[in-house]
Amino acid sequence: MKYILTIIKDNYKLISIYIMLGVTSALLSTLSISYFQKILEDFSHKNIMLGTILIYGLILAVGCILSYVDEYPQNKLANSIYFFIKGFALQKMSTIKYESYLDLNSGVLLQKIENGSMSGKKILFDFYLRVIRELIPSVLFSLFFIALINKTIVAFIVIGYILVFIITRLVLKLLYSIKEKSLINEELINKILARGIVELVTFRLNKQYQNEINKFNEKSATVIDQKTKMVMIHESFFAIFAFILVIVKIAILILAYTTFNLEVGSIVALILYVDKVYNPIAIFNVLYVQYKLDLVSFKRLTEFFDAENDSNLTGHNSIVVIDGNVKFNQVSLKLNQKDIIKNISFEINKGNSYALIGESGAGKSSIIKLITGLIKPSSGQIFYDSYLLNEVDLNCIYDQIYYISQETSIFDGTLRENIIFNKKVSDKEVKKVLNLVKLEQFFSKLPNGLNTELGEKGIKISGGEKQRVALARIFFSESKIVILDEATSGLDRITEQEVFKNIIEYLVDRTIIIVAHNLKTITHVDKVLVIKDGVLVENDSLENLLNQRSHFYNLWHSK
Image 1 (tube, rainbow, N blue to C red):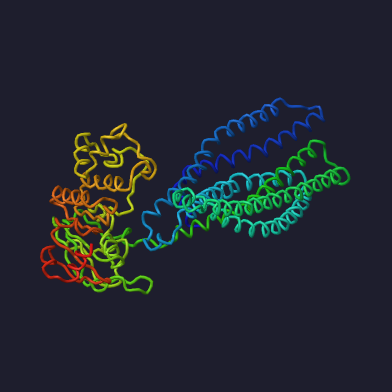
Image 2 (tube, rainbow, N blue to C red):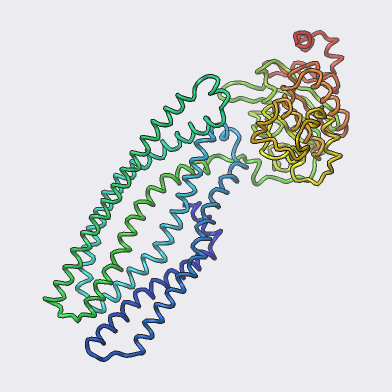
């Protein structure tokens, strides 16, 4: 409910206008029946008044105008609510705790966001607002005018309400269980579809597509069957309701003729008012059933919204700038009851370059995640300059960090866009940087130069070219600290050495931290930190480490 209230707060002006328009339209609609009744009775008495006809016409005309005016807030509000929820999901991704993020599946999450956003829109717009601005006013106004004609008939209408309520409860119970199963299966379908799109090479070469297609078809058939059942149950409610409404109308006609001695105008008005009274109830019950079903979808999305946030991204102290010094003071990290990092202490000084090396699984990437604040130490302290990392807003730190992993991120856009984003940079400067990352030959073969489209996830270029495009971004970044986590794993040894050399020499005022796959490429760094089984075993210059003939010496000569 708190998320619905957030949406209302964000759109309260538009919601207020929309409700007022709805209540006014409901009043005019019921008032028009009252004047129609009066006109019929005047006709029967041959005492027709021109003023009554004019007022009746004015009510109908104003109703038409309001119906048109209503379209603006109606459409704007419906779309605003839908996209607000989707945008909130994106906002949540910006603050979610990294460990919670690791538990997510992108295909399932996208389906949750799509279903949840649509359901959230329906809950607020199609249920709450429609009930408040249309259904309740219509029922109250109609009952009032019915009571003016004959109070006894109101009792018969209430009996009909009770029958409709009982039927609705039975329908809801059936639909609720089917809907939840359908949602789970839809999310699984989306998961299968998403990985079938993303993993083309793996699935095609391993001949897995037929298995995936079979799974998709099986789940699709289940969902189709479930959705069909839901429609048929819905429609059974309408059929029963229509039957109840027929009985009520016949009863009113019989009573009007045998007991109440009503005029033709009153009888016609009563029949019209019965529709006005019962149609909102029918609509409400259908909406209520849908509302309960939508709650299932929306709840699955709010479970994601309620996932734990990274506390360092909200409500912490802000710092304006850092120099580029990082210090680990007896830092340990335990994940899933396993010791990953064990009591590590070291200092990284601004303007210097460092290589973080060790065998696979030694803990190098965990140290990088600790430096970037993605995960928190189990014990010990991490400092940026004099600032304790867990006491500052990470967004301030991220203004000063440029990070590239081996899983290079290339988006669907041109080469220029992928390097400089939205910055204003001359072609000459971009081409200079392309030379520094050894992309001059690649660039010379491009059909449209810097305006060449790289495709979704850079599908049109090789893995090594992707990594060098990402490395080119560093030269246009103003970050004080550059972190390269095996960011050149797709390059040959010679190219890797030359690129590293250019980065270190060109970015002389930056703090550079390199997690290297190929040890022969780190010859230009100032210091090497050697990690073994989560422990910092050596920390010195390359030359001194080689002279010491210890663990690093063995790693160096094993490559």
